[in-house]
Image (tube, rainbow, N blue to C red; front, side, top):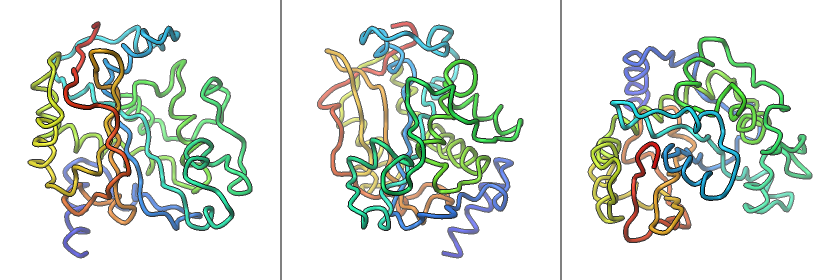
Length: 266
């Protein structure tokens, strides 16, 4: 435990994020096991919006190809798992994931509707943290208001400090981007990869225990990646990612044998 805390402090010093001010701590309903870190492959997400006939959000219409291909791994959200105290009231995991903080009978907050993101309250980020989040979560701010929706659905009922919530997502996203896995994705930008190749890159990064913790979502035929969901132990959320960070998920997702890492504009 002391080693993990020391590593977290060192990482925070290197990244310029305060370990004390930005430690993510639930003020209530803290009896849950894990967080899902949801990261989009942004060009794949935008392509799926086109194919579904959805109105393209501003961040997709204005998307441009940059030199750093790991920047396509963008933040979707950070989702605490079902608290035991909420499950004890008859709420199952399917309902929890559907309604989050609006789950009845508890936490019983107003439902965050994805079609009305910008009508939701602002999470209360500091100006500097909002700027950092906007860089890593293209749907934040502007006309998309993704950060409002994500905090209202997955953060408000836990009483998370908004800056700590944002800083945690930004840190984890950057760790994935800087990892061997992130470099594998960048090296295969615009190409088709196999699930086994992805798995080998994941094992090289964090070991075998991480493999079953990752769920991949694909769309289209041939399939292309749209999202990666990583299940992280609740007690490890404030430490750097390591072989000890992960919990297995029940399903690996629908990206099967091969899938494409779409390039911008495809």
